[in-house]
Image 1 (cartoon, one colour):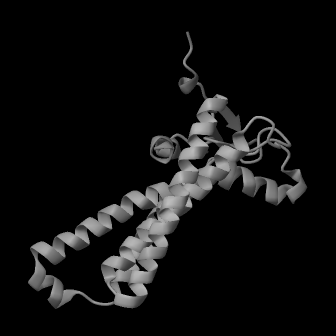
Image 2 (tube, helix red, strand yellow; image 1 turned 120 degrees about the vertical axis):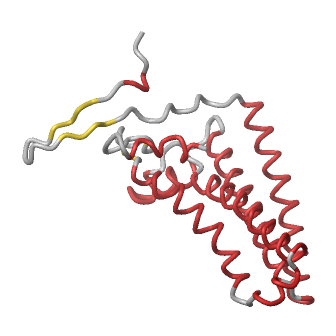
Length: 211
């Protein structure tokens, strides 16, 4: 029995004689049962409300007391809040009876809605950034508590903005870039699919971007 992951189509460019390997796309997830959609939607809405409250409290504390830790925690809460918002949107778009025709937004708008929301790219970016943000906060706390003297000696005010930016930039570069490269509009009028790689070397990023 042939394995779909082992299949490859050799595409030859007659104009220059170059060949490339087109790997099969990511298997599309089956439609979720209505119960799963409802549970997911309720969970995301609950998380959205809770993180909105936490975010407002942290922003208030940051303005009144000022702390680089509050800045990092507020950024962390913002990641959680945005992840819940985008996941809620993705669940809503997946509900039975939800409109699948995004051409009303134009070709560019359709691709943006499909890529960013329906394919959950924004939700995954926020989730990945959230994980990296936890590492940044852990390292900052470690050096401040365990190496307090060195922290006071070498800490600079610009380090907090860098700690805020690193998770976002890392998540965007490590997920959005390979997702864009591997996305192809296969069926006209339908959402583009991810997982089409130009060669075998670039196919190696297949596993990381699906994590």
